Amino acid sequence: MMFLRLMMVSVLSGGSAEVVRDFREKCADIFANGASPTILHGHQYKKICQTLKKKVYYATLYDTYNKISVYSAYKFNKGIRCKRKHLWSIEPQLDNPGEGPNMVPDCSRQSSNQAVCDDYKRSVYDRGHLMPVYLASSQDCADATFSLTNVAPQKPCFNRGQWRILEEKIAKELTERCLSRENTAYLVTGVVPGTSKIKEKVNVPSHFWTAYCCLDHNKECQISRGFIGENKNTAPNNITVNKLQGILENLYKVRSFQLFSTRAN
Image 1 (tube, rainbow, N blue to C red):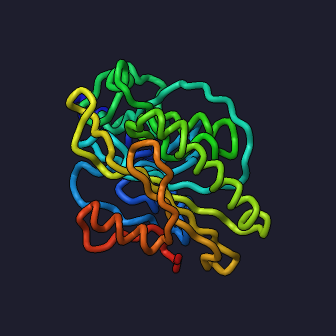
Image 2: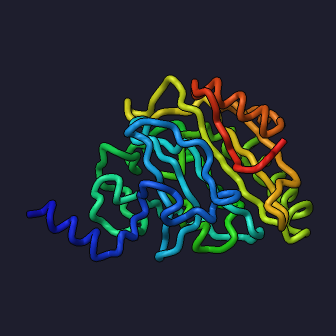
């Protein structure tokens, strides 16, 4: 009876699910030309259209085995100063498909499918954002980044040091060379699973990476760049998107890993 009730809730809600079978169901506009980066194969990978107050702000491919994001994709529209409320949320549909589409500020619950607040307590790692607060274009967007499905364990010296500096440089670059021309900036930020875990549950990434592509009105990529760095306080490597894709193919052990559905150098 409980299962049937949950199915009815899902049907009556119009299928407005945050955890989706295909990103195109709800958040295609988050991606350059409507196509997501490569989706890794396996039952542990879940597609999330990250929703707060019934609005989608970014998209995440989440790894329920390693309890970390693979990547989050988002657009950068403008830079504003947002408050960091530090109100952490979880994705309820990873545990119960019948729950609503909005992220829930209840990270104290236990879960076998995602990280919760207790997993990070008394650890030596920050909850490193993939979709960063610094690139949020509204306060609600900034609040939406505080989902535990949008983070991975990051060494504090890296998170608050070289990675923060990189986010500021990217914002400046895209503001001056992309947004000023009324073009659209698309970004993807992700991690590569490492060999250690927090509390034998949450994987500690070996690398953090990010890339951007600025699309003009003809949907062509005018400027692009990729960055990847080990999870320690060293400056990430500044490389082409093509080179980053090749590195990720080796690290993820896949034949192809495409970041944008348009030509990006």
